[in-house]
Amino acid sequence: MTTEMFDKAINGIRPELIEEAAYISSAPVKKPIYRVAAVAAVFALCVAGGAFAVSHIVRTPTNSTPEMSNIGGNDLYGGEIDNSVYGNTGNSAISDNKPIIKGTAYTDEEIISLIEANKEIIALNISAEYGRFGEEVQIFTKGYYHVILGETNCVDLDYLTLPVCIDNKIVGNIEVFRHNAEIMYSLNAGGNKWDAMNEALAYSDDIAFVFGGSASEVAIAPDNTVFEITHDAKNTVTAGYDLLATEYNTFSASELTDENNYITATAKE
Image (cartoon, rainbow, N blue to C red; front, side, top):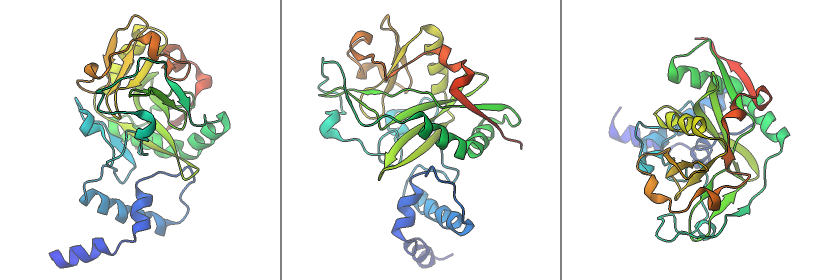
């Protein structure tokens, strides 16, 4: 293929298809022709430097830095952070006040419907990533939010994190978010951040999850022990558990073992 032909192929993709390829809808795709178009659009995104794979799985690099964890130029969820609310994501000024709560929490019915509609593709991606076909993948319907640090510390209930486990150990997660009033998700797997998360949850109950900016993630125990979820993130957090822990951004290992909190699916090779 010549350069001219390549340019024409990329430029010929409709902009709305490229935009849609950056999100995952909770509604199952019904028309094969749409899937082909979406794959083409994702290919165009990859050429342009986007981070979404055709399978819609976001692989977390080993020892990932905040820049490497950033998805498609947006925040860690695939949506856009409102800096007027979250403050300075560069962390030069961190509030010493308790986090404010904004957004609308998801209902149990909304989350269960989302997972039921997508559990097979989630299990397939997780199984393929780790070479663990035939094993039960636990996709949680109960999860946690994050406190995002800034001039105003904030928990946004429009962004929910759901663990994905094998044998009650976290091997990935689903980031649920709203876009144009529609509930969507991204699936994250790979890398070694999950080891740090499992270590934190094994260390103490009610671990608090925090973003020191848009992509520097840590977990904080009640005794203020800090676990780096992303590489070199400790220096982004200057506040302790008592200030940052809320009912929304805490999670415990006991919740991972409660079979009422997840839906299972098994993918065969």
